[in-house]
Figure 1: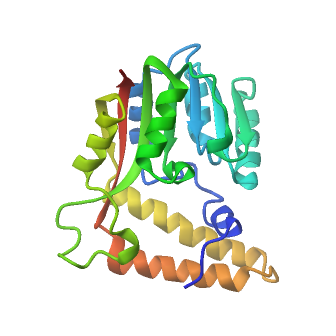
Figure 2: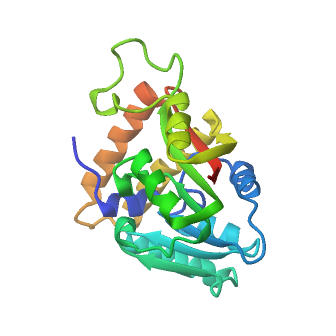
Length: 245
């Protein structure tokens, strides 16, 4: 099986406004739980194409976004500019783990990018150091769901995924008081995955001579098959919102 490349992710999420399975109303609910208002200082880890940063900036926040993918970082800057919020959004290109935060952000968010720290718990520990006492955090991550897989059927690459209760215990152990939970719906998952397929085939038609075209389409088909035969309904994706103790 092919391994995804940065080009692959740039292609399949090139039109995503939300780069996770949440519906727009659910994303707004996360922002509500974070209590983002005028002057709130936000650190967004894995800021992607910048839609989330602009959502928070529109509420008055000053947002610093960390993004390792140059295509996403460029799109994020363009989105902030188009939205008239460029003065409120700063996008930093590079590995999040190498960023040295000032340890006094009011809010830190990481919606689907815990891999930047090799897992949810290390990401939470890092976010705790980046936020002030009493500050708020939101982390979105994948987890198994009850009945999603029969005993022994979980793919080997996913055997270490936590359950939602295990995820919340890690959240508590990292020093955060859980005050909000938002979980993606199956319809949200279908929307998210369908956009991947649409983007891949639209891009392939647009760039028929691209050297990675065949590989990207092959990988897209494999990912689609995995989703439809194994993953759909077997995983959850939840955002935990909490206050740093």
